[in-house]
Image 1 (spheres, rainbow over the protein chains, first blue to last red):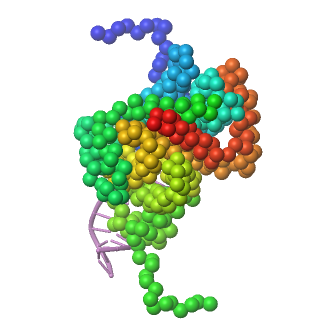
Image 2: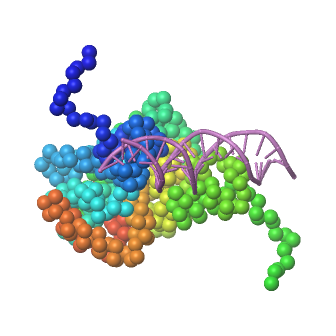
Length: 227
Length: 227
DNA sequence: ACCTGAACACCGTTCAAGT
DNA sequence: ACCTGAACACCGTTCAAGT
């Protein structure tokens, strides 16, 4: 049932930087950082490597562009809550979910923040958190430190969570996987690893998102205490 | 002035797993994750790739072994302070410094914690922090959450700091570099980035180690509040 | 201006052959 | 048991040649 081509329809199969970046994101999502190769890219885009290099200077720049595209949409949502503390939670959860959906994002964001602090991504992330930190009533001298702590916690926790999710993905069943890790921790030498043994049972069935928010609350409480 | 070979001197040029791992760490330290190649490895060890594969199954396993070696020495130091909160700071600083010296370590640790939670590294890290969390007086139900928050903050903050240090290393002068970033933030659109602009000056001459400890204190204060 | 695709230097890994 | 080194499949990047 082929419909007639609309006359106004633009050619959409032209190679553009945007299409390349979209395809890169799709490859990264489905196969991880190792899945983004020029071979896979040229196959999906039905072109040759030279064509891609005409739009993008190299692979690192492509990764940076993919990072910017994903992080922009994640932060564009904005916040709905009134209380600044709740707003920080919304921003943090937005990044947590973006990193969960795009597990390669955490490492790329760390790279982007360090390699390109004058770019758009770094101030956008700092502004997303920092505006709400100001609203929390933190004195001006503490703005940078408090915001950095939030950014670092979010990237660390979300990055670890995403890596865990990818690893658990190779397992048959999440509960079964956590159970086996828990059993392994319980079997550790009680003299060498008293804590891991004692805490092994808490691994079972724990909620990653909940744990992320609980950790965020520690940071927020600490920030509020120095207010 | 060649000295006579001592009779008791053992052959030390035999290829061992230990020597391979040591060399891998040296290569990672001097040239980053991209600097660890089998070519560089075989040149330094004056051997062929097949010899290395006899001792180590593949590159991922070599990276895991390098991670374990470095993290073990970093955590072996133990703590000297009496107060548990101060002990947590010591453990965190030990990891911070190890990641600062070995900037590749943060990403590898995240990978190791997720891919190999039944290995030795994961419970060792959790125990290092968790024993002190218990000593802080946190109720048992909160042990896993509090310890995870600490681990995630430390890895996130230390990882970002190490990445920043590597990036700044390419610059002539740290103060000059921070100054130029600060200037770039001050030149941002005040409507789009009010916070980055306002905080730009705090970038100049800030102390990374101090900022790391301040962030750690936020987490610790938050944990103590839920006690 | 934009794309093709062969070519290059490099990468991790394997394996038959040696000692 | 341990090592050699050629060979393989793959990688990012370049560039002369096309349209």
